[in-house]
Image (cartoon, rainbow, N blue to C red; front, side, top):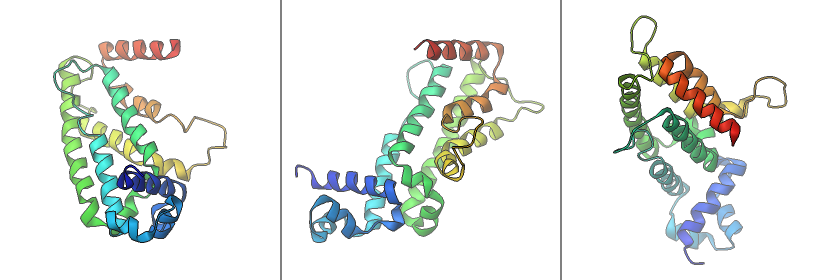
Length: 209
């Protein structure tokens, strides 16, 4: 095996996604790989060490997504940014499905996630302010409160996987498989005419693809 540590992480994530973090043992991960539990614990002493390493992959994969440097930021970035977030959530579905429990059981490990989330909310405010300054979003005032906007976008983004697990997807009605469309619906009332034109252009491009 070329890189045992990476293979352990890959196998662990697959099993956690299938059965949940709390239902998979270190021995089951080792058995799935065809190695001894001792070989696995040489690289990761306990299951929480695996969790810490997986969380680091999640944080590293989403680094710099919100406010890219040195380029114009259009509404295309809004779409692409959340597409990347949901790609990460799909890859590590167990983490986001069980995030509340993980935060409670492993506060020392998941503290990094809390800190990163706080930083992202600050970055999100910078992005919203940029969209206001460039005429894409309406400025604050009256019923328009960007803190609520950011909070609602964050809630849908963070808990989409968890919420989806609670819904009956076999029932007719609105699609539950389009998180980005749900986020657009939150943003649309805040768009200026310029922002709406940019949005319509993006949707036309998507329809033509």
